[in-house]
Length: 310
Image 1 (cartoon, rainbow, N blue to C red):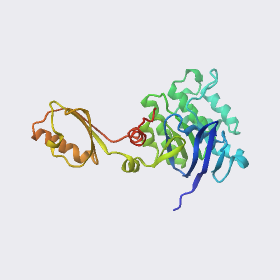
Image 2 (image 1 turned 45 degrees about the vertical axis):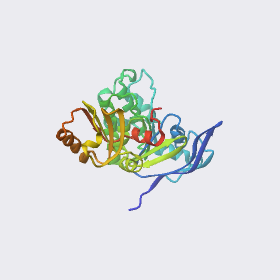
Image 3 (image 1 turned 90 degrees about the vertical axis):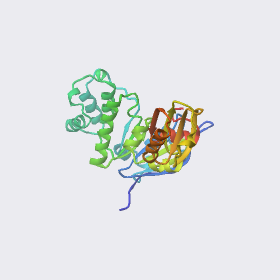
Image 4 (image 1 turned 60 degrees about the vertical axis):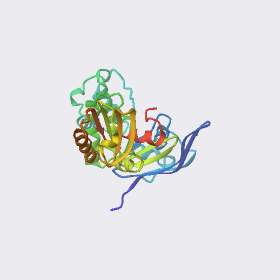
């Protein structure tokens, strides 16, 4: 079955004075797809999202959303898109329920939709609470609820869980996963949390200096750009790594000469038992051992030499 394009970006560029924030980008996002947009500050993520939102106009190129443009179908697109920003400020002395009713009135919606949203974002118990008393996680769930009032076909979320504790972050994830499974919502997510992109999104776009430098699933990005899984070992005495007789090693990175090393491998599950068994057989003491899959930040470092947070 053919996928239906929802957002089509063709040769889009945007400059601010001498800075080219977005440089001739093209991208197609399909119905029901969750896409993560990652990159350091200044990469052009916000400018790209603002052009999709209709806040900024491209200097060059075109953007079609559901086959429409902001120039000719602004009213229809406002009803088709839901937005949730990194930080949303509410009127302190109105309640959660009143806030949803207020924003719902912009779309001609009534109390019934407010009830549905309170249930969806798990804020029924806080319906009569003033927004000023809500926790950070509750405020972000309310902001997400506002974005969902109009039953949007497309969600644009700008770092929706920044500053939240892990439990509050996972509550947001559950809501977003439910939207995808129940409604087939399409989403673009900007985030600095590697785990968030990995958990929620099928496709990851890595952006730097106004361009996409890589895109794909995490496994595809690892295969193409990564250096493999990581095993880090600290030994109690000097040793010759070749004495372990290991296979499947892609790269060695010495942290402390002859005592601490990072080993990049194709498959942790295959190499790690061999490391432990070989060290034991050769009477080499392992003081510390760490193993993990490569993260998106690792990938970005391997491609650019910088961290995503830089």
